[in-house]
Image 1 (spheres, rainbow, N blue to C red):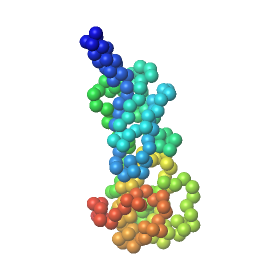
Image 2: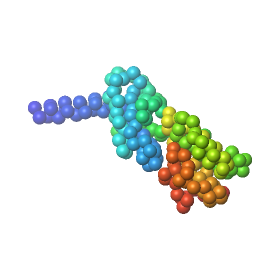
Image 3: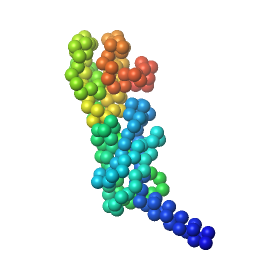
Image 4: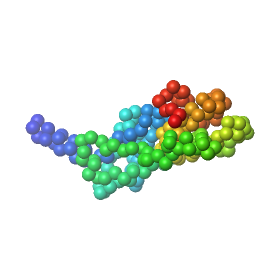
Length: 199
């Protein structure tokens, strides 16, 4: 009887593992600090799951399909979609999913923007800039570029650009971080001694 129970238990666990979407969302540590709560769901299914601190998540398969469309949410905004193939649900390890693709905005662009007087600082803000912001950007010859929260998947791209841009502004123009727009991406983690350098 015990032997039959073990067979049944093994079969049940095996069946469960093949009917579960298992994934690991790959993000930077700074991204996790900025967005500690990320939800994921399957298009057309009822359930949602909160991604844990390690980026891991599991979702039950309510209906067998060859592939599933995963929806990722931050603050109720849909920020990413990803196609998950059914065969991946049979893997022992969760499927790794990079949260953002190739950056269209890079640190290499900072030097070019500096030389052409088109330096930018990206801010997570959807409403208009204040008069103080407009005066400050004019004084130090840069432009605040507004970014919607829906584009938060590219947070690391904006943060890396800002990191190098801030070095130009702080070292060359002696800009004060305290007077920057509070929503400037990466402002709170900026350090003049970090590996990024002016070239």
